Image (cartoon, rainbow, N blue to C red; front, top):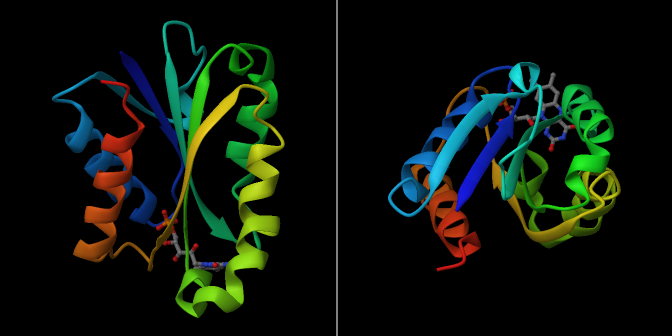
Length: 145
Ligand SMILES: Cc1cc2nc3c(=O)[nH]c(=O)nc-3n(C[C@H](O)[C@H](O)[C@H](O)COP(=O)(O)O)c2cc1C
């Protein structure tokens, strides 16, 4: 299976999560990682994993615009989303907010099948080992063995 991970990051946290995901699944799949600004086409990708941090209550514009630009290509592919944010520390109090303001704008722009979503806690460039492990477990679970 060919997996393409498309991400953006301002302070490096989402980038570190992306690297961890790549490391976890590259034993089982052909994995390509691209920063969103470097992606011209999704040709050949069977599963697209999209990663974005949250800034000012929304996913990065670069990622939202990427999904809009590649909408037709995404129709025929499987996709999964992970976000990195701070609000997750508020637990169940923030669940509705995260779903509606952070995840939904991404899901709305993906016309294909979404096989997973994940919310990770991120700082400014620093990541906890727990979150890294969570990201790795999630990514392995996405693969169709
Ligand atoms: C200026 C600024 C605004 C942020 N806004 C939000 C926000 O609205 N909601 C949230 O949950 N986290 C917010 N965060 C936390 C970031 O999503 C978090 O630090 C993330 O790990 C940053 O990812 P990056 O290092 O890949 O850029 C904000 C962080 C900064 C520095």
